[in-house]
Amino acid sequence: MSEQEKMLIEYGLSPNEAKVYLAMLLFGHNTVLSISQETEIKRPTVYITLEGLLKKGLAKIIVKGKKKTYLPEEPEKLVQLLETKKRSIEEILPELKNNYFSQKEKPKIISYEGKDGIRKIYRETLRSKTEVLWFGSVKDIFEEFMESFETEKKRLANPNGSREIINNITFDKSYAKRINAQKNPKERVKILPNSQFFPSVDNIIYEDRVVILSVKKNFYGVVIENSDIANAYRTMFELAWKSAVEP
Image 1 (tube, rainbow, N blue to C red):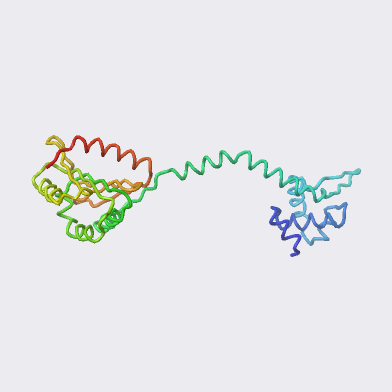
Image 2: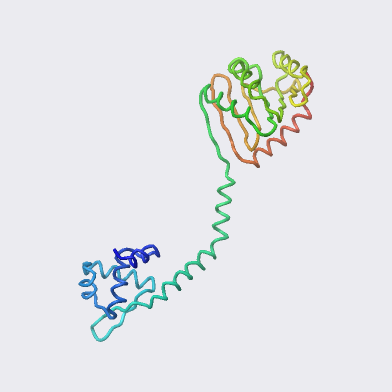
């Protein structure tokens, strides 16, 4: 294969189109038979190839009586066609970009199953580069995960702090009092009013992620990664924080 053929293929021609077009440039007026002989491409394939070149505007037909010959368009036509393609792409570019950014903003959702999956999620939250907001059932978390979780929490202390809203039950209130007694301004816990209750779940907001966990019996977790959704949940957390009470 010649360098010219390679360039024409990169331009967008098929290997047969490149070979036929170059043969037409070299020999001028061409019949299907002569093209077949020069390129060693079978006549039925030459017919198909010429149709492709005609559609691309790189060949034209001259008819004299019953005789039909093919003539190549001048090579400058290749540049014109590229410019036409470029203009066509530029016309739809805004729509293409809009589709790209729409896809980029779609939430990324990852699910985890089993205790190991939930432990992995907890470890990731402890590496957060933002404040971590929690709301859920501490009693259920402690029973299933807290021994290993608290060890990790001490090892990977988050300098950005955390706030928690938990249930108004004896176990959770005891936990809240213990945390608040440390008087760490970056780690505060409040409890729900008496009429409210979190079932066996844990919910976490950090960075651009929202985490929803089932921490009792059905061990399952979903991580939603999207800045708009995370910010919406932060707003809801702040509203709940105002109505939550000290233990």
